[in-house]
Image (cartoon, rainbow over all chains, first blue to last red; front, side):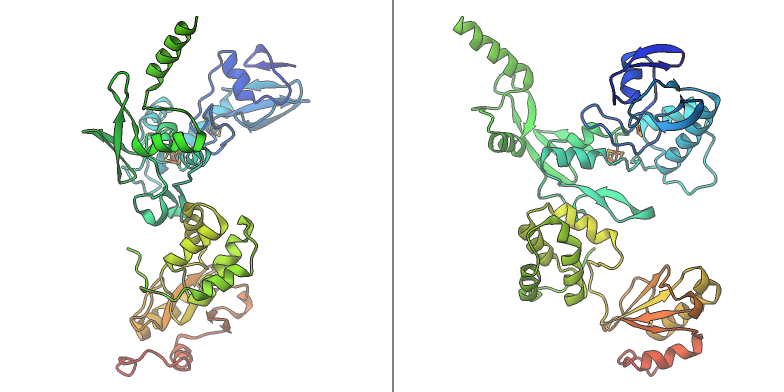
Length: 245
Length: 166
Ligand code: SF4
Ligand code: FES
């Protein structure tokens, strides 16, 4: 299937999302809530583009819009720029403090917010990626709580979460760095809960929490006699293979 | 933060759970039943529901904090809901709230010290023609004037102790 993105001809599979095709062809569309591992969140709306199909133009969310016909896409028209600027402004009013949001604000020349009450320390845009990441891992230790203006992401009762294994996947997927993780003296603190970190038996680096290690062992039946970080595990597998040869 | 009565008798939670299959889609109905029985969602009851349905506690907490009809703190025996939708607002719901605040020393979202009344504002009870409206438990009072509030509350026993001094 042939689509045109910003004047460039691109090949697309049926049902492929515009964003993926654009990225493959080196065309940049800004995103916040898009994660390769957890696609289809579609909550930040930053990735809007204009689609022309059968003579009609419409604005769609590129990370969620499947290509089903020969369309022409514009990622940076006057109209898109204007709308995206508004979106950035609203996101920045909600969560002014994240690094990425700050950069976007500069890029789009967003003035000091005077119309809305702004919490200067807020980083979370409520995209929900962290909640999904935790759900994907099979724990759902955190969720969105409350609603409307008091909505936020938190563990049950806003206490250190019982179900958490300290894997920090939530912090890792968060596009704005809103989830705090601290590591010191062989401990990791996240969601106000402290976890003991284990050292890699190969290189001696702290890399995994005890709960995470147990969880992987039990739940996924992965045979790890001693904790090995990714790099050392690859090395040890390679060594075993060499022995076999 | 969240306070609740200690050692709530949870035997009724069991009989509520018995009425539902172990499926996630019944979560809201179960929580509504518990709310109705206990006037709030006791924390241990939430744990029971979690174990029964086999779902994470965070899903329960998320739902419990989402719906206004559910509450994690005990509500009063009588829940006063003053409608503050557009029609009621225009016709003076704030005056009703002020009157109740004066009579019961309670603000929206709070419970009286004796635990008998809680006060809430809601965004519409679908009786705009009767504005301003307030609902106590399941009974509706329409076309209200602040002066009528005292007598209505007296019908619920008012507030014990300092009622007369008000
Ligand atoms: S904490 Fe981060 S990932 Fe989670 S909802 Fe907020 S912005 Fe999204
Ligand atoms: S990246 Fe598409 S809506 Fe956020």
